[in-house]
View 1 (tube, each protein chain N blue to C red):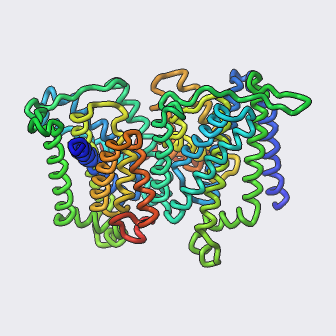
View 2: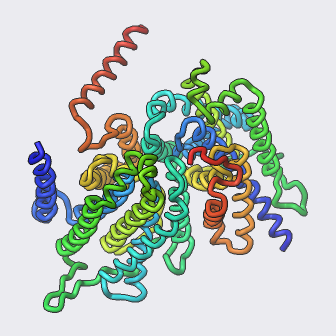
View 3: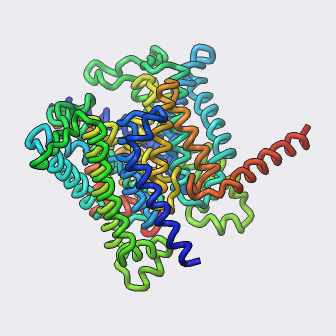
Length: 336
Length: 289
């Protein structure tokens, strides 16, 4: 039993990394293109970072797009204005988003539940309006242009991540590995276990003498740092950043990726991101009304699969749908 | 200069009146059911568009009443089929559900009425300026403020003196006790939801006459309404009223001195309030925090 439960995560881990590392091989065969795969990894990192807070600390932020977007703008502006080093620009973007998260987190941290969600949403919008209005710096509504990711110089070899999508994919994947590795490590540490304790029973954790607010603030800040990292990668991917990345609709999309994949699972959000990104790409090429379909996915997801793709017991889901249909039929039959 | 400030304060009060109608509806639903209704802006836009469609047949005055009622009916249907399932669950789920609904609303509005803005004509006698000195105070603006004031006054009287209103307020404080006293809580929540949506629909019709129709008109008013609720204090309807007017005026005054910060200023206000008085201006300690 114990051996089994120890082996399974290793198997999952191996399978996921094998698939990710071999992605440039198998994705084109399925008709995907490299930028799509890269976007899945980037948004997967965003979703996993938010899930550090949502799934493992049990606190709902609906405003993480702000820090995602700040990471993007920070990285883009750094490349545009004062550096030719991609990693340095990324680092500056991460700092911008992370520090903003740390500051606002201190204001938010005493709120709980619905109230916490509302305050995070509302604060997230500040940065949207700043990016929207500060034309001279951010390009306003048109978005930030005029920067390109720069080749990585390793001395003996230069990786041209600008012109070779596969190389850029591996750069993103390496960053993703660093980010998820750090979060996985934190969750296994005593600090991470304390977060789980707060999620499970905040009052008990408080009675045990755990400084709850301080822990939630730390979790919020860490989550903001990593979400800013993925935002920076997103800016590098598109060589572009625009205000919609900071808007609350973006936050909602990140949250739905988490719920799609399974909120209690470490890797679930990555799968949710894959499903979401591919579906969005497909739907928007198929119909102009893709927003309705996306909305319908939200609604159906919440009503029928609240535990996500990984968390659902599929047999139960099918059974409950059948049961509801039968009951509906019985009601119709009864009233006729 | 004083004229300019007066102009923008009036403007701010009018915008604030929209925020108040919208935020009061959101607040009613949030207080009794613990649901943040992201689709509220969608209902608002729908209210405006439905009025636009039916006004040529029934006239402006009837549209002003019928459109919000139709939208409230739609709200009632959505509440009874979907949202009620999520009461008592993690707020995450109702948030995502209404978020998805907001997407659908905006898209359907765009598909039916088009993405470009539409003008909404108000009766001619309402579009005259009151006097040549105060050219910016059209009668429509006065009319709008009067409608909002009447509605808000009516709502507060209803909540204070009617049996149903008292039950709604009691349910906000302790739903379990209200339920055990024999009140049908499910029906109460449905009615309350529809009432909130009615206010959104009404705000939509009024906004249509003032700023015109656009599929995103409601979504643009949603965030300031959140801020109004937080500034005024979550759980307090008078607080929401105060918060809505305050941020309207604040953003109006900022327009004079630093136009591009007129949207951001309300969030700064919110930060200051949260820092100095975390429960909001009129909020009660402990409620929903």
